[in-house]
Image (cartoon, rainbow, N blue to C red; front, side):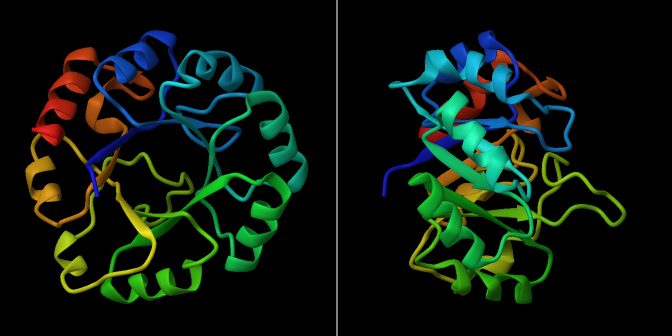
Length: 211
């Protein structure tokens, strides 16, 4: 498998331009979910449009209902849906049937036993995104700049493609590559502030990944 990068939490046209310039394969837009990077469906549709045909666009959702998913598909027209909530395998199958889109299912990890739930999503998710569990008391899903212990992944495998997320940055990306995973998701690690990406960090991060 070739190496791939997803840059998530994009909020500005210039950041999308830089993500594309430096080779991102997927661009993530947080749609109507609690986050400092939150976008409306209409804004996500507008700023993601230039990426169409250049990289896959991802609508990041948290426990979205059918009405919101239909609206996202009709207005934004993403290539992929990222399910970052408490969605069951049955719910993923319903969403797949409803939308016909590829699905990224997020699995939050703190302990090795958290990895057991991955098996249930094989066959109904196209990708499994491994992220660190949110700090206790924090309602926001993802985007905390926190990593989990990647040693937990030793000897663990699945049929579904893994995407590694959670606190990735220039200081730890070489260690992330050493896990053997080939798909990486970065957000805060290439930011000057929440939702404000830094061109030089995007360039340095992608160059380090692809070297």
